[in-house]
Image 1 (tube, rainbow over the protein chains, first blue to last red):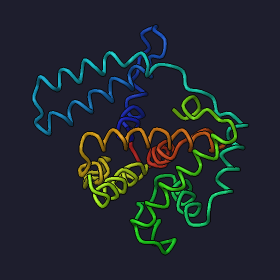
Image 2 (cartoon, rainbow over the protein chains, first blue to last red):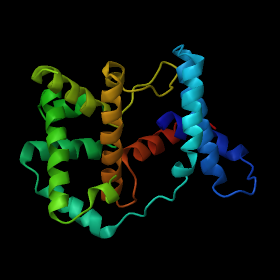
Image 3 (tube, chains in turn blue, orange):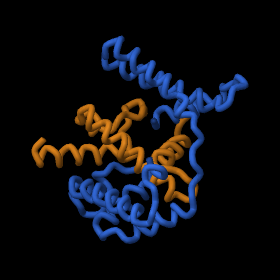
Length: 147
Length: 81
C-alpha cells in the first residue's frame, strides 16, 4: 500500500485525465495491481494463479472506487472517550502506536514504554478489543463505521 | 491449534497491523517481517485487523488520516519525482 502511494505520487505529474470519473484513483489502483503482480512474479507463483488473482483484482475495482466516508466528529469524540477509558497499559500501548504515525517499529515503541515487544503487542490487541467493546456500548455500529 | 500456537499467531497478526515498514537498501518499502511468518488465514486476519485499525486511526485523526497516510506523507518529502 505505502509503496503504491509513493509510486502514484511520482506518476501524478505525468497523469493525463481521460475524461472518465476518478481518473487518478483508477491510475492508483492500476499501479497497485501491477506492483502486487510483479511481487507475485518475483516469488515465482504459478502463472495461472497470478492470472486468477489479477481477474479478482479487476472485478474488485468498482468497490475500491466507492467514495470514502468523511470523518465524523461524533465518532471521533466517542473514540477519544473510549481511548481515555482504557486501562493504563493497553492505553499506553495503543496510544504509542497511534501517535507514532508509522515512523517507529514496535520494538522501539515497546522499549520506550519499558515493555517487552510481545507484552506491547498483547496490550495493543487488548486495547483494540476494549475500544471496540466500548464503541459498541455507545451504540456505534462497528461493521458500518469501521468495517 | 494449541494455546501457545494461538498466542504466537495472535502476536504475529498484531505485529503485522502496524503502519511501520522496513526499507530495502534502495529505499523501497517492504512488507512487515511478520507477514512472511503468517499462513493464509493469519494474513487474512491481519488484513482485516489492519483495515479496522486504519479506520479507527482516521476517525480519530483531525485531518482524517490513518497512520499509513501519515507515514506516506512523511516519506513524500524525501522522494524525488
